[in-house]
Image (cartoon, rainbow, N blue to C red; front, side):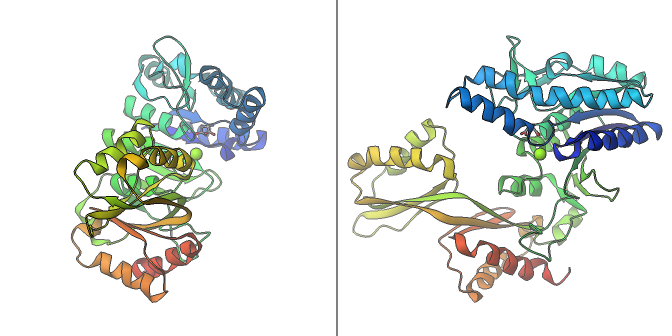
Amino acid sequence: MVVVQKYGGTSVGSIERIKEVAKRVAATRDAGHQVAVVVSAMSGETNRLLALAKQISPHPDERECDVLVSTGEQVSVALLAMALKYMGYPAFSLLGHQVQIATDSAFGRARIKHIETERLLSALQKGHIVVIAGFQGVDAEDNITTLGRGGSDTTAVAIAAAIKADVCEIYTDVDGVYSADPRICPQARKLQRISYDEMLELASLGAKVLQIRSVEFAKRYQVPVHVRSSFCHDEGTWLVQEDPSMEDVVVSGVTSDLDQAKITIQRVPDRPGLAAKLFTPIAEDNIVVDMIIQNASEDGSTDLTFTVPKGDAQRALARVQAIMPELGARGVTFATDVAKVSIVGLGMRSHAGVAARMFQALAKEGINIQMISTSEIKISVVIDAKYTELAVRVLHDAFLGQTG
Ligand code: ASP
Ligand code: MG
């Protein structure tokens, strides 16, 4: 088999850990597989480098920032390749530009456009272990780029797709994907498998196991991804293409997201073009609006509420305030003490009454729902942040409790 293994920051966080990873890679190779390895920077290193940049300037130059933070992965690939060579294995390291991981030029959040595979494939065929720096690429002008925080996951899945690997193993410090955050919900259990679409919802809802772009890649190229722990040998969670039996499970996971702010525009005259006027400037600022609700209008005016990530809230608010006079609204309110809690599952497509069950479970605990949104396989509610953990637990009990 052709195997891509990705090791995250804690998995290569010390020399001891790197030696352990080398043993695991070597064992995979000994089992007769071709192995390409993608590694992250040693844990804490990317943050340390970013902090250095901040000491130079509050807004460090983006191009140079990528030159700087990409060095974290340069250290870890070199050390891992060294460890493998010391054990007698034919291994070598490659940086993003040496592989030719071609990206666009969006420094700090670049997207992979193409990966050159010739060199990788011929090395693997010769039995060499290739150790590839995660998180980095090169643009058309030969500038070093990085893919955004957590981007090594995306490197790994993209490499696996490009070389048509049989599996992409993501080694991390948790042993799989759970039905809820085990720190919040003791009943949470490890999922054996989950569909790409469910994982996309869970990742975007704040389950931080995988960078969301890596899941998009996995889905597009149908890469089987195995999320597992580098600290033990247990099976983790498989990310796979959906099959009909998956619809038997109504809810696969419950997640919460505290990175939400809520903005309400009060008593705004309800005219055609209102929403366009409001959301166009926000979109121009590259702010991603998540939930939106507009109340039924009364006396020709209405309230409109929407949510944005906390980090963008001040900018969004400034945009709204700037157009207030033009909209003719009475006022704006703003809240950051809110959370989004969601249930996700393919089975929602074929089971009726899932939303009602969710609302009953929350009502029983006296948790007020401020906003609701649904998609084919997800129902989200916005609630007071102080009830987040309680809400996750009662929803887990309601949908996943009995079978645990
Ligand atoms: N080292 C980068 C980060 O800390 C990329 C990664 O770990 O995936 O975000
Ligand atoms: Mg990570």
